[in-house]
Amino acid sequence: MTRPLVAIRSVAKNFGEFQALKNVSLDVWPGEVMCLIGASGSGKTTLLRCINQLAAIDAGGIWLDGELLGVREQGGRLHRLSEREIGRQRLKTGMVFQRFNLFPHMTALENITEGPTQVQGRKADEVRAEATELLRRVGLAAKAGSYPAQLSGGQQQRVAIARALAMKPMLMLFDEPTSALDPELVGEVLAVMKELAKSGMTMMVVTHELGFAREVADRVVYMDQGAIVEQGRACDVLGAPREERTKAFLSAVI
Amino acid sequence: MKPAPALADGFPDLSGMQIAREPHWFRWISAALIVLVLAAIARAFANGQIEWSYVGRFLTAKVILEGIVNTMVMAVLAMALGIVLGIVVAIMRLSPNPVLKTVAAGYTWLFRGTPLILQLLLWFNLALVFPTIGIPGLWSARAVDVMTPFLAALLGLGINQGAYTSEVMRAGMLSVDIGQYEAAQAIGMGRLRALRRIVLPQAMRVVIPPLGNEFIGMVKATSLASVIQYPELLHNAENIYYANSRVIELLIVAGLWYLLVVSILTPLQMLLERRFARGTLRLAR
Image (cartoon, rainbow over all chains, first blue to last red; front, side):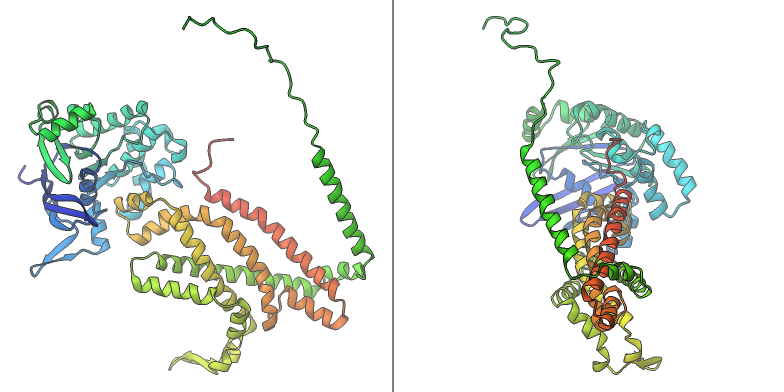
């Protein structure tokens, strides 16, 4: 591994007066599963949204697969990329949202084929075969023709994961994928994510599921007030935290 | 507290008892009163000075039928123009570009702010301002020849409708969850593609009831084009009564046709609503 898949350097992001990210630097290596934990408002979701360019950073830089995101350096200045260029860069990442955000007017299968056919311009029958295979992989082969409203939260989130995978991303971003689910539905989504981690996908997961982090994550990053406080192997950060703030957070959530 | 017995005594078993029907006295009385009032109105019209035979005769007169066809053609075309303009203007209004935003707001302000009949008269009399119109060096014509009653009515009604429709469309687009834009962006869609594929289809579900309302309004608003000589239903009915003086009879004929058209449109709207409700209808009910 010569270079990280994601390199985040001195990134800052403000919402008005509020500093959501303060001077954050981080590397994510190919094949790594990274869990981001921390209280709400700590900046972990914002960090994911900056990587996927749903939010534009105010300072610093993010490189994905060696390519600087969102801006181009020219003559000692940074110029914003066009919407088309940003769209192209986004194809390298897949995003799974807390509230699923499936397209309600399309069936499960259509949700998955929409990106490959409309954005990537690929052949419909080839995409359809892949989408069917993805649905099988997330355990929903029988639900291809169902609309999101006819699916449970856990099933919707699994379709959303399949939709993101259909674009063949190098990096999967999960923004609290199980927070909006009833407790009995969390397991099925985590199982799909574990299977994905095992297949070697690079993943960044914002989560409150510490059990998942302990079991699956190669690295756990604890964030607080827009900064990375502590990071390391899951067993170290979760089992024997060094920082006082990490200890306080963990004792509050367990 | 002592451990409770399985079930306390003193509460009789009500299973097997039916709920008695309520008498609903007020419903009977009010229905009877309304029937009386309707009968009185019907009697008044039957005995009034209306030659009902004229109504029957002119209901299917050729000129009236031509009028209703012209009315529907104009309503459909002007509404189509209004919807296209409305979508474009709503997208401009919601764009981050301040120039587009201002242009869109100005359009809505101008065409919603003046009476429709005034706009129709302005379009029809455009020749007074620009005797000849055209593209310099390529094509030109006398404005009187170009600005026919048909074109003036289409432009007047359609452009005015666009101003109202843009607000309906804007409301529809705003009703779509922001997460839908984000999910569309996340699979690499640009703004316009996300609007076309993801946001507009969902907005349609919300805008069809108000658009149905607008279309019904449009069918009737075409009658204003009678003032610029467009041969729609009311204009033709007027032409007949200028000749035979059966004013009320012909107004009733026109009124019945408008009612019939609107009555047919309502179930059509429901079909359309069902089409766009895909995915939101709950399972078999």
